[in-house]
Length: 295
Image (tube, rainbow, N blue to C red):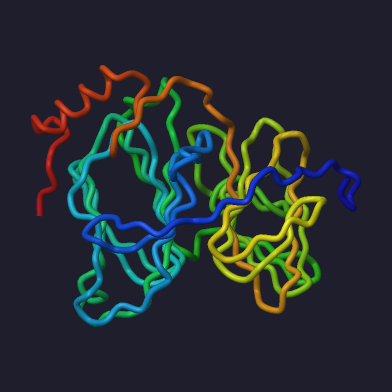
């Protein structure tokens, strides 16, 4: 039971992120999918890119690649990225910006370091989350929601020890501007030493936290987790407790969503409900029906 009298979710598992290569060869930290922990319905993947200091000319990205059947959420903390796709969409993301891309029926997508950033080098840090789409939305037209940092709501506790950027969902009475296809919470918390918060999470949501700075205690049992670890919560209570018991700021992402509980076949950048749909996705991509990026 939490201090507010609401029931508190326990921690059922702490997962260490592994290092792997993506795109042209940049390193990411990934708590899932990894052997033994392939997905956390409806979330398919979480990658932390950096933090890393890149010398001039060394920044790498993910050139033209297809997507179908899911959403990719890019959140940039440091650095600048250019993106373009086969639907004619293009732009640039900088520190604090969010892009919520619903691939739907399919796009060919490119995510590369911005030219000036690649030329000069600098510090790069960010996240990408893949969110599964329900069967009814798998083949919807692609769409983008892009929010510059200034448009992402920020809330704080009265004592000022906890700040939250509300990317999706709600926290401390503040609602996000992004519209999600299924109920999703995506919250970036910064807890100063001594900071504590009880964040409501609906009982029908799967929920996890990913720590990317400092250390904290989670759940009523005070389970410890540190930088590079994901905390998976049980589904039997109304809130999750986050607490900074260290001497440095605690940085974490808290994500929750309603599990789809649908058949899923996943191969590379295609996430569909049947094997035949995956084969069709390959055929559509290889034949050029997903288009190409015009530069």
